[in-house]
Length: 161
Image 1 (cartoon, rainbow, N blue to C red):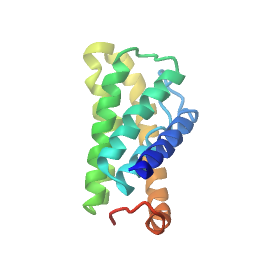
Image 2 (cartoon, helix red, strand yellow):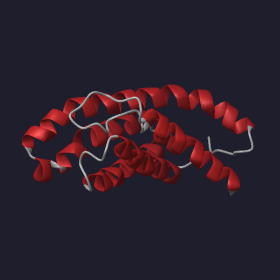
Image 3 (cartoon, helix red, strand yellow):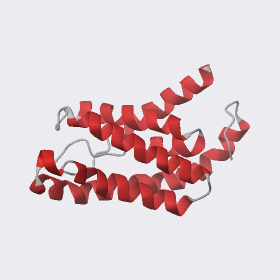
C-alpha cells in the first residue's frame, strides 16, 4: 500500500512540475498537468489517474492564482472523469478511442460546460489553447507510456498489461 502512495506522490509531483509548462491562454492554468495523470491512468489504474488529474489541476490552478475561482473544482472533476475514461479505454486496448475521447472531452466539451457561467467570448477564446494543450498532453503520454511500462513491470510496482 505504501508503494502506491509513493507512486501517487511521484505522479502528482510530475503533474505539479508540468503545471509550470504553460500553454498561452486567457486563463493561466492551461498547462502540461494532465500528462502524468493520463500515464498513471494507463499504467496503474483509471482511479489513480483521477486523483492525479484532479489534484494536479487544482495545483496548477493554485499556481496560476485560481483565475476562474471555484469553477476550478468543476474543472478538476471533469478532467478526472475524462482521465478515467482514457485509462479505462486504454487498458481495454482501445487506444485510439481513448485518445479521441480525451481530446474531445477535455479539449472541446469541458469548456462548453462553462458557457452559461463564462459566456461565449471566454469559451471561444479558451477553446484553441485548451485543445492544443490537450493534444500535446496526450501525445506526451502516448510517447511515455510504452517506454515506462517495462521498467514498472520490473519494479516492485505491479501493473496490469
